[in-house]
Image (cartoon, rainbow, N blue to C red; front, side, top):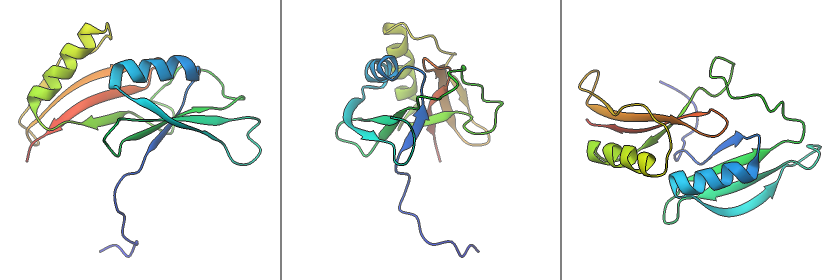
Length: 141
């Protein structure tokens, strides 16, 4: 049994992007996010900041981080750090609706994958403008 203090849930995710404006437009069109606020980075980050986006009516927040000294290399999940971001939906039909949405706005994606093991699930994978893998996923119980 863990002795770690309690957690109330997941709060937000920050992703360093190569072009904040392009990523903000992409996340707005693709995920329906809107700008909540802009937050300067603390400390000596040479003008770094995050455009924090949200999905109205939800507790979902995503920070698009600008670091002036970022290497601007495409994302590679084989490097230490983030591998992918999985977004939850409540049914397999919603996964199919996301695939149709991605088609409608011209976002390349993999096929909708459905499986029964190790638990019922359905998912669709795609990437953001920097190559960060995203998936929309339903998991049954």
